[in-house]
Image (cartoon, rainbow, N blue to C red; front, side, top):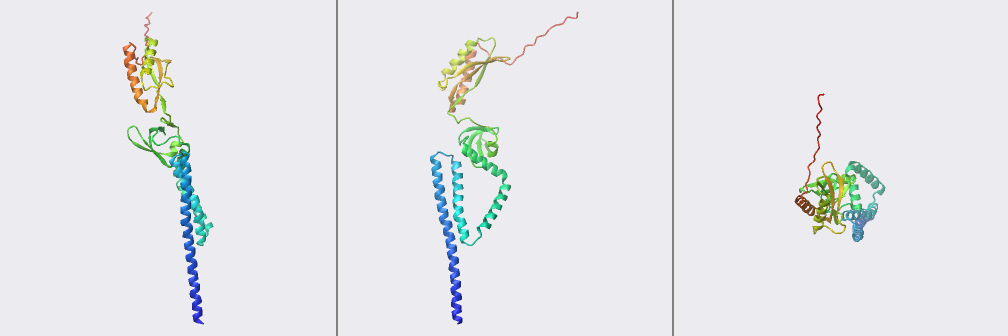
Length: 276
């Protein structure tokens, strides 16, 4: 009789061990299969976004979100299979997420701004921009910050929240740019001669675009000079080179024609009052 009891006791213990092993193996199987399924679905989403020419930063973010959302299903199933109370686990994770969110409020604000930058795409890596009173070439764009390389070769890291809350000027978003120059001549100079020289110099430069056509217009009669607005269009990579060439040629050609560049000046009239 004792041997029979011992046999059934061992059988029960063995059966309990088998059930526990099956639960563990089943939970691991849920996690492994769920991981590969979530990775595959995230890969499909990333591939579709690539076909639509979405920003790399946005593709990376969305694919990670899809992976977490899909993997959470087999994760909850594995926890349920292992005998854990999923409701309690979800409550703990919710409270933990709230605490982390409050502690990382500023970082989450930068994160949200990074997502907006990815969606709207006001600039990309390699663009020359002016943001938050700083200008430079965009070196890297992440979900939390943007790195600029300034013209004097400094790296500046700007929080994305500072960028999204300020005006953004992208100087290289378009293929062409207009050069705005103000050229002042003396009131004693012949305006027709000055205008003809400015027009001829602009049209003679091979890197100035014919369409849109350059404009040379009389802008205003200033205190010390008569100002012409000279506005040629160039390809964006030629902006600074053409501007330098035009200014140098303007000075030499105008001076050769007898025109002058007046300094700011004021006329002072003195009156003598007799003692009588």
